Image (cartoon, rainbow, N blue to C red; front, side, top):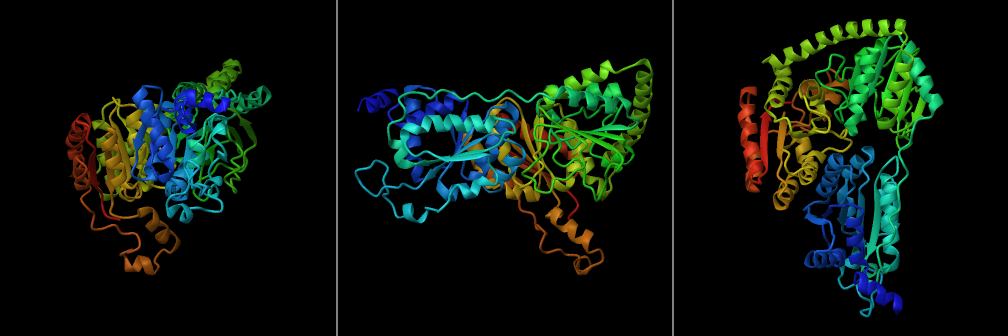
Length: 571
């Protein structure tokens, strides 16, 4: 009885302790799609609002995919994990491909899901009181998440809730980061909690590189004739970009940036974009935070090349056939390792080496200037094949400097990399394991950075996968408006191209209609935004982009979402 009195005096019940614990963990938002099982949490949130006690802001998401995508976007710009709450098995299943996106981007969100009540006794608070409580129960609800998350757990009793939630956040934020999943039976939420906030569990400090391995890597790079750096996400922490830029300038080597984050300045003379064909001449390749450094069937370094890797998760055990030929892998946080590697190289910079590196920098810069000239020619062309480049170059010019861009352009990603110039910390992609994240992610970014204009640039197929009705409604309801820029080729082009590539001149090519991938006629995407209080326009030429951006910036300033429907050649 004494323990119950202490718990009641502190929070009232375990649900109230959950709300206070989330706030203490730094979760400013809980992205929620409610069900019968979330009633205690909803009451606890209302109590916290009434009492002005610490609590995350509840953001109602009318689809679970949008909820987790929003939590991802928020984390990308803040580095602070948020909370997601869904109802039982059905809500967990509706997270869908967002689980995969979060896994591959090491997002340490904590997902809370209800669990159908155990008790049928009316004397037990939270007991079963609806037919759905039998129908929604599964043998292994957590199985949905196990392949994609790091850790799952069920809260068995209210008094155990606090330590379990603390453990979820600790595991999620420990490298390599990832998802945690906590099941919350309704009875447990209505029981007394532990009597006070459980002690926060600290996460380990970031991994530092092994000094001997780092020295070996520096020696390989210092003696290389044709070194190349390949990265995806070294710019996840923008400060790493300056260190990588200094390293590339010192060595005079090109940098391939697959640009899930801005990891190297777009206008730098050593920027090679996404062109992996330059790998063919490399003798040393340094991989920094790369998920897929190259596609072997399209381009690869010579078999004789030495491949170095620095990554918080160099083995990538969750990708069963990740078999890239790495000669030296260093498990480390690149934000720590890259500055140390640059320091090691400076220590190896003899006058002879410095002269060779300087000459190489001039030679590589001249060669890449020719490549950038080709990009500029594409942007200036009015041919159908260059339409994405021309449109995106115009978009790059029209966007304000502080605009944050979320990228999900699939077959037009190469054009995005060539043409869209953004500062570190203002551009986010996911590698798109499951399409649709950008429109939901944009809401999370806007909640995290209310003053910044937010633009989700996506294909028309990706826009549809993002449950846009839910994303637009949820963003409007939350006061987190964004603009969706749709590169509209009226097709699932990523699913048509393999047919043509694998069966050139085949029946599908001869037929020419590709009914399985066509998305024509296109709906009125700006009309969809208008249905939720927003607006936008269809754009047919690069000259119209600036006015469309201005219109949507005005909409965002008024708290309304916008859609720019950029019409590209069909197919």
